[in-house]
Image (cartoon, rainbow over all chains, first blue to last red; front, side, top):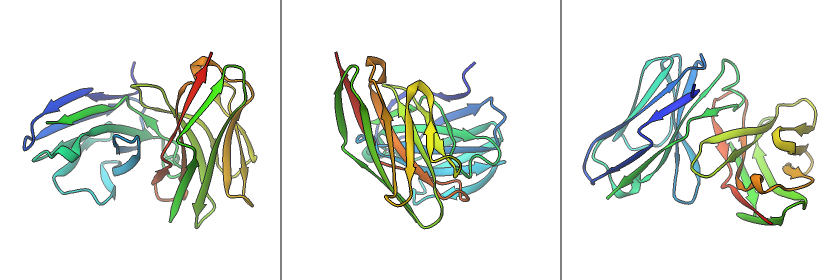
Length: 115
Length: 113
């Protein structure tokens, strides 16, 4: 069983479209994250939810909207896609109390290509 | 505020040689420090962590790292490289209370036969 699973793994779309990436974790963790990895492999946090409550919201365009229907799911919706949104998006989760120390469990990533 | 600097975006070693990947950090509070590994087309996996206990930390696959406060460093080492160690390695720092993990820019390790 995959601990943190993301769908889809690959997404190719046109500029201006709207797309969603879904994430589910079966580890029983309380905290979930979205990270963006650019073409130079640089990883930056975008959002974090703890028990469905938004706790981190970095300087991300408001075209990006996370949604956490329950503790085990964190989805990412992107409106009006731009070329610069092309990246690999990683979902992650952390156990209670260990998210504060930075111990994360990552999914395999969703590679988004905007044409 | 916290930051991480990884010296060397690419390190190449021969199989059986010592692996040394360098990481320096900056943190306004006592840090928690991590090394994560990313194999091609995969997510990141925790290799080892320092959370204010022993300064020499052992991780998976024979890797270890030493926390040196005076040098603000947390370098990753392995005595003998294997071909399977070829991957991207990320050093990361956390302030311990804000759920925010800051990553370095990564070091690509290649292992030559």
